[in-house]
Length: 167
Image (cartoon, rainbow, N blue to C red; front, side, top):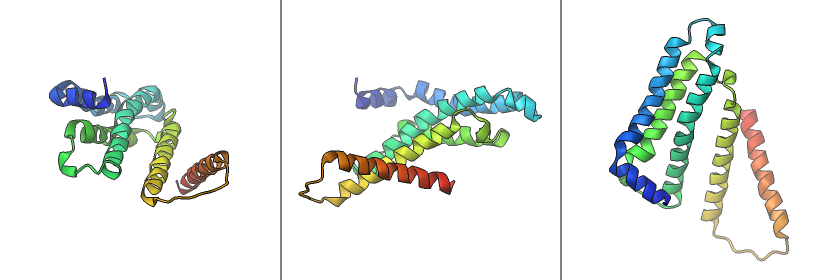
């Protein structure tokens, strides 16, 4: 099964996928209501918040990355977007993260820093690949490929360092 086959089957039967994506923010709302008011009571629920963050972020980040790829590299029109597979995961992620942020700071959610680092890496890779795609340069060089690879990794590390200083 290819990714296109998966999207086609979800488009033909959107109900279960949409239901799962809509249940994640609803579960975040329920956890917010059940977790109490004092910081000690809220922190007891931090692992439930972690599961909800990752359950919302994995499809949301995938949809966001897929949209960037489709618009920048495949030149897909906005008019042909699939709302269930390309928009609903991002809306679900945004709503879930917003509700969780209302109750608990993300610094208390285990692994949230790793998620932001992963997003930074994806953004840097897409930016570098888009730049290379648009550059269309031809070069004859005597620089070994290993040096070019080290330079690429160095640029990624520099972007990661700059991102961490920015936020």
